[in-house]
Image (tube, rainbow, N blue to C red; front, side, top):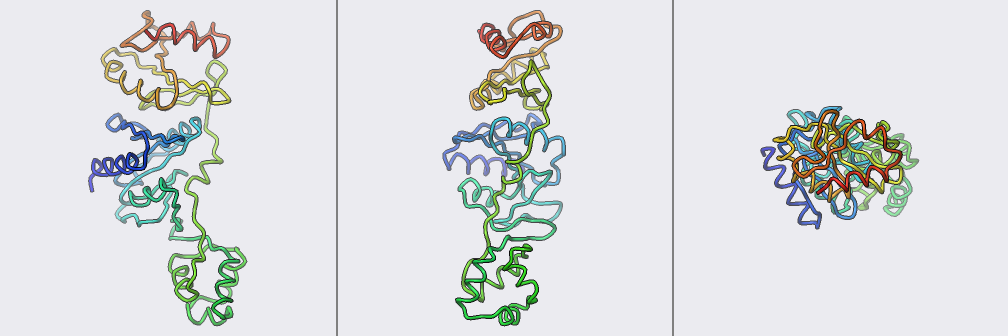
Length: 294
């Protein structure tokens, strides 16, 4: 499957589940699809998930965090190994999976397995113990039937270790019950803190593409997309994209310039460096941007 096929399939799954979706593919962006259905999701699509760089990962995670959203990496393989359906992978703390797994995630049917060197699952110890006793099996009996050591089974029931996919399937086959709990692919990212710097007293991050800078106040009520490139030809091409992303992210957008004398380029407000130093608060920035929007 080509990257274009992956992009189309991913976008199709989002739209079919009621997401508003916008593609930034072709802009060398840290994310290829911005999607929204209540919460924002930023999606990067790569044939090989190992092609994701640490810089891209940091940008997509930070942007998603500031939007109070999530990020996900969709791919088909890791190096030369095909990604398995229903398995969550991870690259630089960005959850990843194939299109089938991504479909499960946006349907809120989180996968059971997470790839950490090899597939592992979290077993619900009490559930496993109940299922074993219901089947009238001792740990020794189950060990014989599954070829898993008694010590390992004991540790599963005490929630001390995770299990391989093969072991989970072997136990479930014998006890005729589901014993594994599902992985929340966004659990790690929900605790992550974006690397920010201060811009007019509010948090900001460098993104590079599809825009240069994203900033938001502490409550994330006032958000801004900023461009530092002010080549008219480039900005004219990007104007539609910035307008759409600004709408999806509920953000204002402007050009931050050191030299530009105009107040507006290609319909995009320009805020000059010397003006930034004179602004005392976010309200003044909002007023300036809105005045120059037309």
